[in-house]
Length: 463
Ligand code: NAD
Ligand code: UDX
Image 1: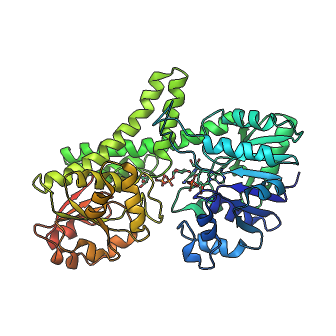
Image 2: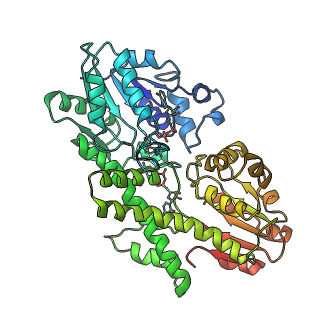
Image 3: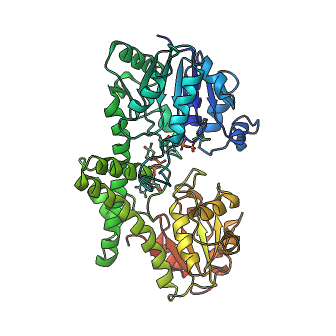
């Protein structure tokens, strides 16, 4: 079975880059990415590549090559579904904010809507691919919705979770550690798996394409994220121990990471992990474990989140304590608002929580982030919903210039590890700040001793 026409529902951080690379590598396949968010689709179609709705290094080049050749962005969901022989579902699966499982389970309403729309519109057989991260056994529900339409169309469901990380999406897609494809272990299921393998095989070596049953694939995605987040929480737990014992967390990370059984990656102590995936996926894993009555399993993974919440709060408290336990009316500069460097995504960013904690103490915050808009910062704070919107607007301002953000501040806090922060003229920043001038490095990216030579008082996580 050779796929000629792909539709992807959801033009977000996953759907956009993933389909751009699939289209770039398969010029003979027509790929249409659809979304109900018309503004997002318009931005994907913007001639000015700086206006793409998501920032990812290298993405503009891939889009420029494939767009309007065999890559299209559209709001006409029905037409794209009808024309496709393979449909990727790449919609968001956030944590539920209501009802049963509130605050833990994945909200599958967008997934179910997609399945119902496919069921309604499809007139020819389709392969439906779960690209979104889903609780194990979701394919069962999708199958049940699709198969009960009674219009004779045959569907095969595959699970093909995405492992890209934001900020390195293009690189991760072009050279993935592995591609995972799960499907039914029947003749038709295996044929569907092969059709998707053939698409990836145009650029991914076959030994890096793993095929499994549906449930292994769905569960592997949730647990891969849980394992990664667990490493961050483990090193963050050690960061506090380092601070009280005189050990240096960076030295400890290098020493333990040199053990080939442990490995060097994902051992960077920080103000806490953020992003749209880790917290949501672990909470979902905890919920699934609880729903099977596996309480010890649930508690084990929940501790990763508890540690992360503690780390964010600990950083905020450190700022408050160091500034003589009173920050009311003081200006504090934030360098970085995104949840990591090289992305404009702010979902679950530690900066939001630290800002909220400091604003609760009536501090004034001035933020500089190279890629995040003032409007986005306000909407992140308003989403937390801890104080009136007017208060958020008067207490937090976004600056276009980092030096302006730091001018007259009592402290500078580094919340995102953007490379440019390391190259700033820190002497100039010092000269223009209130004294004593403090730096709180939540990402461990600045050279502590050279800042101290300038005159700063420096706190760096884990030192
Ligand atoms: P996103 O919010 O950036 O994008 C989802 C898009 O789907 C939105 O633009 C939304 O308008 C659209 N959408 C929702 N319902 C729709 C419908 N019925 N019809 C058409 N469009 C619809 O989300 P994302 O970050 O791309 O994540 C998507 C999925 O991929 C999630 O399940 C997530 O867990 C998973 N994932 C994300 C990442 C990541 O780094 N962001 C990595 C791997 C996996
Ligand atoms: C993650 C997974 O890495 C990816 O495989 C999955 O597909 C989606 O979720 P993402 O959330 O985009 O990707 O970024 P990631 O690089 O994993 O970083 C997550 C958070 O952990 C960031 O806030 C980052 O700053 C933090 N982090 C990461 C650390 O604090 N220390 C580390 O050593 C690594």
